[in-house]
Image (cartoon, rainbow, N blue to C red; front, side):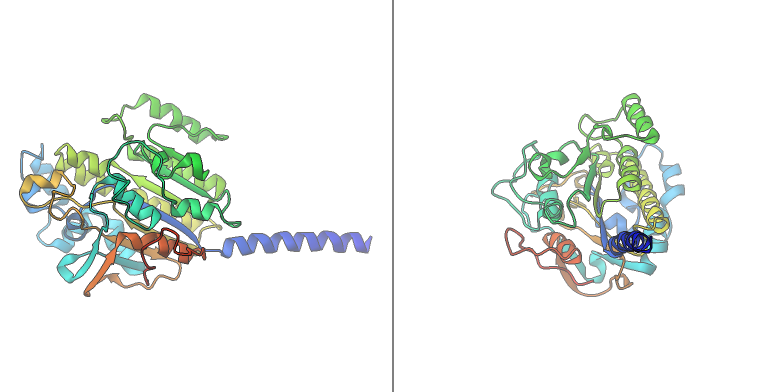
Length: 359
């Protein structure tokens, strides 16, 4: 009887030790906001756009909501979580007015090349030359981690744009991707079933991009159920509203996404698996124009400034520098090697060109 009890206790201790060890492992949440300019992130609403009736249908209301006399007040009104909470626990890079620069290394300056660079750690201007739906020949950080023993089955991606299954190469990589107008299909809980129905009933303004609220809540529900160690969430509305020339909706979407990110962070602070063990990296796939004025709607190699991006990072072990005020030059291709280093996955220089960032 004593031997049986000892055996049971040993099994229980071993199981508890495995769970505890897993909970101590660092987790990463990578988030992108499609085409959000560094100018709005760091200085808030643009004075040349917020009162321009060509781009704003209710200038009085928009100015009341987002206009303030000083840039620091404007940016806090636009993205309060970033500027009241993240500044005290993380780092914000890319305010070129203070010398902090971050740029793409690809020469395309639009979405598929930008996401490939973020996710693979290298530009591919020879093969990634359009936003067409073709499987990415490069290996993403999601696939690399999924191929490891500790990461197998613990990776997930969610995107508003329906090209993400191809960018991540879901077919080859085996990484589950819920993007575009896809439903939750694997043992959906009651909330996911409701989201599935709601997504069918609420039309998106666009044919290839769903509303970010669906991407967000599908991701959040999956995190609650499956607890992936590496999560990628790609919000898309800001870019599409900008292309339409709707500055009012662009600002409102940026503000809303700030709140969605706050909700993800708050969940991780209440969940034993993620609490105090998670690093957030937040960035964008490309910038936008500034001058001439109408180029804010666009991006691409012919738009000056569309290669200017930014990075926000906070969480486990991140030095709380706040807004970085120093001369520095960072690049998008450094994000993947940084995540691989955080997750202790060797790169072996096989396709990863960037060097890990030091946070």
